[in-house]
Amino acid sequence: MNAMAKTVAVIVQDDLDGSDGAETVTFALDGMAYEIDLSKANRAKLESAVAPYIEAGRRITRGRRTSATRTTQQRFDRASVRTWARENGLKVSERGRISTELLEKYNSAH
Image (cartoon, rainbow, N blue to C red):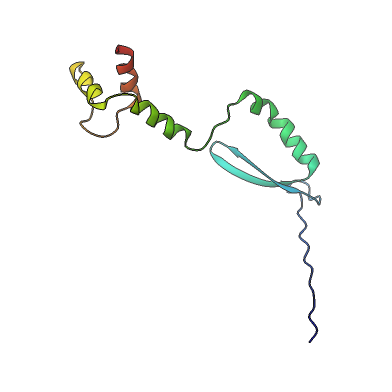
């Protein structure tokens, strides 16, 4: 039996102009991630277009908001915050999460 070899070539084309030799580029906007296959020329155009926004922006990591909220809430003794809120006529739940707004008011008062 003769074994036949098979070669498969994958040609990635630019999603904008159909040119060959494109590479996949990933980017995100408003919490949505996108992928697009771009040639070197179109990738350079994309990078040039977003460069001012990247320079002026802040880099974030996943879960930033969640960990920031946890850090804010962990700085305070929750029982003390609840007692203070009740003594000052503010609504606060008996259990669970304490709002960031209430924590900020507590922090300002102390």
